[in-house]
Structure formats: structure tokens, C-alpha cells
Length: 111
Length: 114
Image 1 (tube, rainbow over the protein chains, first blue to last red):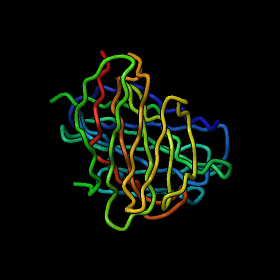
Image 2 (cartoon, chains in turn green, purple; image 1 turned 45 degrees about the vertical axis):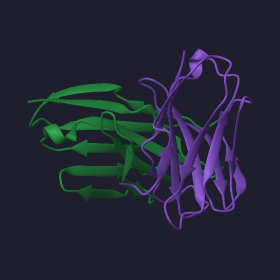
Image 3 (cartoon, rainbow over the protein chains, first blue to last red; image 1 turned 180 degrees about the horizontal axis):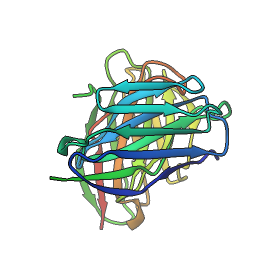
């Protein structure tokens, strides 16, 4: 089945540093979504990207979809302790109806 | 609050037993999805229902089954439980029967098999 590789698995940053997580697929994706799961919580939708080369921003978060629609990234500028959690990408391709989640990047922000 | 309700929140049972997890989707959502999340693992898609019909199947074990009822709530049945079935089981709902659009997750049911 479709696989989405997400790196890094863990990331520790000092508060104020930037953070980036990447998702890669060997197949062309129809769309990609990003979710955040706080410790002990449930995944919460952040954004969906559909178009090739699309870039969307939400305050300090910048989401990109690659030109070939095979990769995506989430960048957080000047992390805060409230950014702590696991960030998942979730993607689908034309052949698969369901979203396939990446393994997630667990972000720790040190005060 | 996502509007998706899952019960029970916690469940402890023994190997070989059977349990049923219940999910009520957000009002108006016709699709229900079940995901399994093991310790420090990602979200593994199990199965999706749309308006009572099975629409997509992931890596769901034969010992597991699910259904969606006319009132749109869904149940995930896990039988002949094994230690490895211990996990957090999430239900999610969405309006559409497609792979686009936001998924709203419930708070999960944590299953511990002893």
C-alpha cells in the first residue's frame, strides 16, 4: 500500500528556534493534510494542501506542497512551548481512498 | 471539543476476551473512520464507513470487525484479544465520502489487554 515517510521522528529544540518536519512519498499525492497531536490528546487538523507548489501560512506555521506533489513540509518559526506535540502528515493518492498517516514527528520545546 | 464521542475512554481486559468500542460522529457527518495508535506509533487506518456502508479497508485484522448503524454511530468489535492489541483506538468523522476534507477525531478509547 501507499507509504508516507516522515522525518525526523523526534526533534528537540530550544524555545525560539525553528522547526521543520518533512513528508515524502514515492507516489504522486492527491492531497496532503497536517495534524497535531498534543501529549495525551487526539489529532487535530491543521491544514490541507492540494495544489502543486502550494504554500500556506498560519501565523508561525508554514506548510508547503512540493512541485511534484510527492513531498511536503511543515515549518514552525520561533517555536514556543505551546508547539509541543506530535505532528503528522496524512496523504492520499488517486488509488487509495483513505488517508495514510506518516509516523509523526514528536517535537519537544525546551524553555 | 471535536464533536466526536467515543466510549469507553479506558478499557482493561484479558487476553482472549472480546470488546466493543463505540463512536458517535459529529452531527451531520456521514463518514466514520477507525484508526489504531500503538505506543509511540503513528495512526494505522483500520476501516471507513459512509452512511452505513463499508467504503475502505486498511490493515484490519480478521479478529476485528466494525459496522455503522442507521443513526450513523459506529462500533468496532475486537475479539480473541491479544497483548499486542493494546493501543489507543481513535474514531474520526467527516462530512464527505472521500480522501479530502478535514477529519475530526474523538478523544480515543485506550485498550489495555493483560
